[in-house]
Image 1 (tube, rainbow, N blue to C red):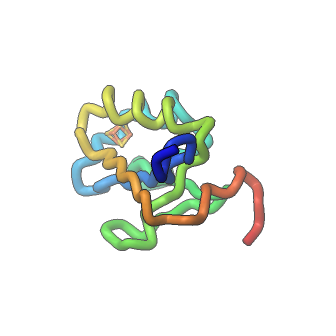
Image 2: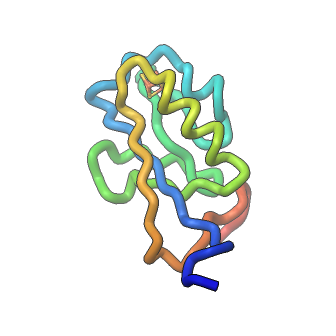
Length: 102
Ligand code: SF4
């Protein structure tokens, strides 16, 4: 078997808040990963923690495999085109389940 076959590729997502229109479609598609704060802008959530430091590497959230399809769909419909999905084949750490504590 080739390396990587059968392995879950870690997926991360972040939002460019400067482009977010605040329509909330991402939250409609996947409320486990996206949230709107009081400023009306969307942010990503990892393991129940809102990553609300716009533009920083700390706002790159790991996505559980069960939410990956919904995250892709959210990115497809995002009118601001500001949801960015990255795959990291070198990341050995899978996404922690929602509600898990480090
Ligand atoms: S779908 Fe895109 S533009 Fe709309 S709230 Fe979410 S991130 Fe912002």
